[in-house]
Image: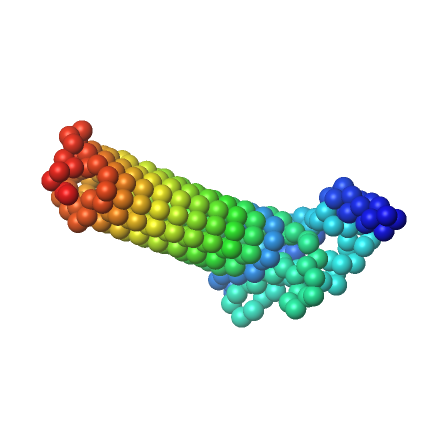
Amino acid sequence: MYKSLLLLALTSGAANAEKLSFQENLNLSTDRISALDVIHGAGDIDISSYGGQDIRVNATIESKKYRSMERFRETFERDMVFALDRESEYAVLRGHSKPDLRKSPEIQIHLDIQIPADLDVDIDDGSGAIRVTGLNGFLEIEDGSGDIEVSAVTNDIDIDDGSGAITINRTKGAIEVEDGSGPITITDTTGDIEIDDGSGEISLTQTNGNKIIEDGSGDISVLSSDGDVDIDDGSGDITLSDLNGSAIVDDGSGSIYIDALGGSLNIKNAGSGKVIIDGENRTKEFK
């Protein structure tokens, strides 16, 4: 009985531990540096451009695991990697636990990063939200879990994501997305788009480039856009409206709605749902 009460008290105390946090800053000149690599474990990442020539990192380190700031800082220094180094023409920012630890320190590093707009950026992230805005360089993201938001990027974007929502808007380069699960929303873009998606809704609006979409499940909508569309879909409704281009559709299941298509239409397979074109039910023609 005594052991049970002691265990309950310890468990309750751990559950009620307050979140502790402290700040750390890093700075590096970008002289002769063309790209920033971010290797990150857990925590949010926020990257934006500014008018200076340095890479400026403000980190908030936090955890609910520790009862004292002294113990928290000791564990951070011992078990975590947090550094910004020059490696040839690259800057490498590391914020993660040391490899081969027997137990996770349960520490999150939230990164607020400001960089010159022309740097290329490569992010390798475990978990946490990612926000990137105002870049002219190439952007590559490999992410385990957490939402991704990209805006005002003028170069190409390559995203390989496990789970979480992806939002892209006001970009000018080509976009390539390989996604496991979660909704994808792309708005106001001018480059070609290629999406390979497992599950989750896909919504494209004012995307003025050619679009190739391979989807497992989830509704797909492409609205008010220029460029051709090629869709290979497993399940979910497909809506194409007000498009200045041609469309190819290969559908497993779900209805197809097409309105105001400016180019040719090729429905290879209509699946099990309805086919509505310009308000007219033409399902029988494709069965």
